[in-house]
Image (cartoon, rainbow, N blue to C red):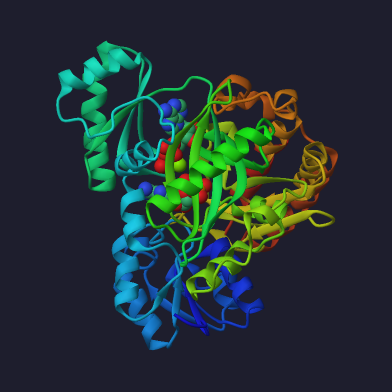
Length: 499
Ligand code: ADP
Ligand code: ADP
Ligand code: MG
């Protein structure tokens, strides 16, 4: 162990930039790796050194473990931060990093291994008396037996891939007649998507809230919990809006969940940052879902309400330092909201969109934080996750954080791709969201694409008019050689104006 002097960030976009910012504050030199699609990205420019590691597809760049480790040695960096996604939950990668004599900024590989399997994780949770969603605790091998179990649990049930993640590998089964067919599909999908066909069943909780606990552990065996984040506003079982603290937890339930998370972390010899995910029902009963063994996308809301820099703590832990925070010193300071700004069209089933960011102007002002990896003029590449930015607002109360978010969303100008911003504003203004009266079915219960139609605010209309003029002038200049691209753009504007 020992002090890290040079850090390679094995990731891209907003999270690469976010990690490097903390490294710089700690006087640690930074190395970016990038694919050919990201040559002009801000994370590449920000780094002290940047190395191209291959073509755009992640399998040939950001997922090429050997290449990344070779680059790390070549530039004499002493540690690798994997961010989230890509290699962050790959135990074999963590092992290789260590075998190369480098520091992996994350948990021990044994813990990644165990928690990477939802089934293994459930078994540890059961041993530790952490409550589980009713279901099977081993992979299904016998269909008849599984059907019987499903009957006992009661429909609807959920078939889940043990190796699943990112909202993928889940199938809802409403009644027995669909069981066999769905089981066959789930197994083959799990095999092709995750290379592991193991599936299990869980009761499908009808009105759940997704609430997760952030934990931090050091290599000396100390573990603390940094309270909860609620991430119930989801599409395709993936989070779009997160907040801390949750609007429904009582101090007692918060403490009970936090202590369960700490117990679980200790049971698998965990250190570094991790998240224990739970589902909470109407009676505030909570059930363990899974553990994510990495820094989470939504970690900023926890930073905002605790005043801590999670990346700094991750680096210190990886250096072998004992935790500098004690449970009894931790306090919730205010309320923080995060919306994920995805290049997706909420009016069209959240279909990913690509294009050029013709206008990209971020909101500013009190209590606003934007974590992003894009700039005006950049193209949104098709190869990666379509998240453009995370917009985070913090205030002393939940209502103020919501008002601030609405203001910040109105200030955020993105033209060139469709984004989730209008949807997020809709949620912020919804009485059920404001009242804390919602669950993971919010979109299904309260949202239709029409709700975003017609609501055109004046500021947006002005920009539209301005852009129309700009496009018109551009068209005048380019008519001779290229009319198609500019006329496409203006037709997009027409669409917008008539919504
Ligand atoms: P968080 O729980 O931190 O919000 P997400 O579930 O949104 O994380 O996933 C974080 C990132 O990791 C996303 O880019 C997501 O697409 C990716 N990801 C997580 N698990 C998987 C998986 N098993 N397969 C593919 N991508 C995954
Ligand atoms: P992933 O690895 O894809 O993140 P999770 O097990 O964390 O998988 O589940 C993702 C989301 O799916 C949860 O946040 C929740 O909305 C939904 N979900 C998972 N399990 C259940 C369940 N048993 N009942 C109802 N919803 C569930
Ligand atoms: Mg999850």
